[in-house]
Length: 103
Image 1 (cartoon, rainbow, N blue to C red):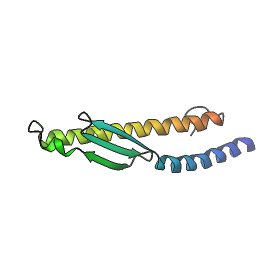
Image 2: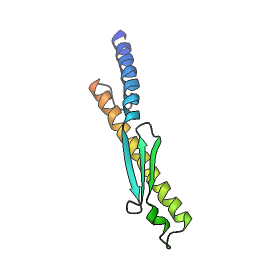
Image 3: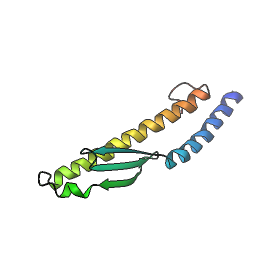
Image 4: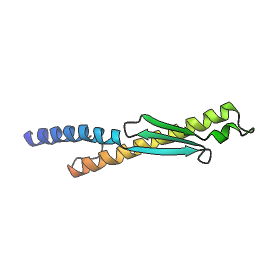
């Protein structure tokens, strides 16, 4: 029981460290052929949003379409951040011999 408690304490410390590390890492996603680019941290915070000014000159794109491009890029970047965090958590759990989902 004591060994299990120590493992859980170690896992908790590693989780705090992982959260700090993830907050420093970023992922990005684009939409509209790269016209919109969203950068999200591993903490799932939007840290950058780039919109190519040229898309505002495109008469075929109305404001709603541009909004959709932004939403698409941001949501995809968030999904990528979640994947990155999940892989890191699996790595820590596996290194400790914990079954998946224990962290």
